[in-house]
Image 1 (cartoon, rainbow, N blue to C red):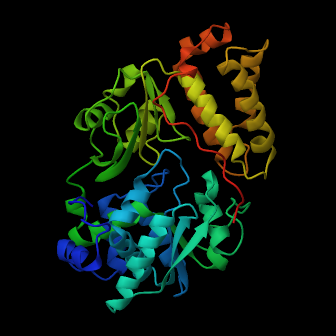
Image 2 (tube, rainbow, N blue to C red):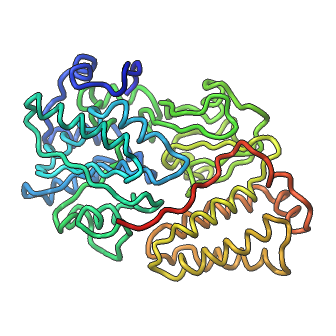
Image 3 (cartoon, rainbow, N blue to C red):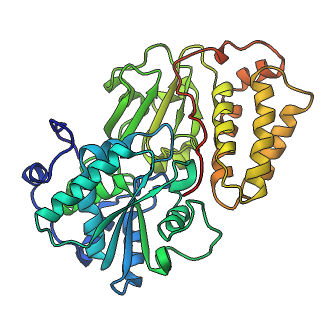
Length: 415
């Protein structure tokens, strides 16, 4: 995906082909190549891409659906927006390859209604391909509400099928019955771009970077207390400290960081330097997640208890309203944590929080409550000294510290 930024906006089709060459046609060979490459989905779950494609291919009778999930409801992430606005044809190449491989006849680009620039550029790129006479399945755009969980896989399927962008209560596998009951692949935009590169250069080329368990590169969004915030393509064999050093370092000594986004993990400043990006190592050895590739660094004097509470309050307001653990549990946790963050706790507030975290975890209709309490739990565990200060009623200057991105206002509607 690397290369000079195109002058005058996005990379046009002719420039794209001149830089990378024509893409090969998709087919069964692509499933083997993906498996050999070790590519994993970049939407946050890091599921093996070849297994998703193979499952849809096995069920397709020529009427499958390929959905490129570029909705990016995570407020801290910018990678998919940057990718789709600079290299739209790379993402579209991956989508067409997927469609040809699994004999799909419908390609959908799924975007947030707030992503007006991205939509305009994708539309222009689709028209370019049509004018060039490329023999491809039809490509269309479907818009969704700008909500945190509108990009969850079952919410995507529900919206593209004509419903609301809310997660569904279903035991159906998308590979068997997804959009309008057709076999469906829902794949993140960055993953599609990696697939398009692997198709051109092969699995061995892709494995030249990264690790055995997490090969290749990844797009990473750096936010907060960093000298050069932005989106970077990084070697998955790198460490967090290595990425920070290579991108200019921090503005002030870091007070910690949130890795992986609002469903991510809070890190102490001491743990950041040597922490690997390898998703498998992060999960197994450090109980953390690279998620959708986000590192938001706390400035000196910042307080993770305060910032985690702000995130929790935002996520509580983003509930789809479909289950008690999310509607009632997150609201109760948010209200209680706001008292603690303000250093005005009531007796037994902390005991309530720990009890409610256990009651909420694993009981939601989707993973929204799990992600919300996961980031909170990590903040309470890693920053115990800060927590004690709040519980004892001591004033925290972290409430006034600037330099860490605040959550946006909650979204409106679900269409």
